[in-house]
Image (tube, rainbow, N blue to C red; front, side, top):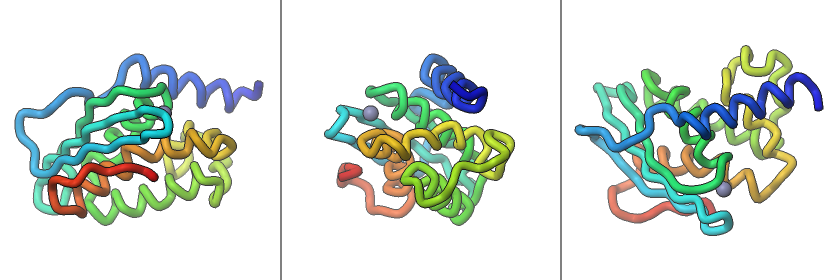
Length: 153
Ligand code: ZN
């Protein structure tokens, strides 16, 4: 196993054991539920907005290590970003986990930061849905009318 693979696994394990921004907030402006029926992952994401900025992003979730770690990493990555920046980050992340974009040579010090730790899921199509669930759920919270549940199908 390469050093980079080990580093990536340790990032995922750490976020799975100690998820960041975990738990329902007292106040929020947008929320959505997401489900990945293939794996059984279920997430709720909440966003508090300050104008156009994602001032706070929190989640709770049940599911596999990849889905929880990805949700935790996502909350850290998008907090403080504008909607447009969060959308752009999702595009890059999605390209990474679907294998359309090569993993950054700089690893977690690259432009995607610790999100790069999930690059390995591109080799496992079922895991792509696990890694993308939190992002699809965030997109739903930000861009859809409240109500309809989200799936990654
Ligand atoms: Zn999963």
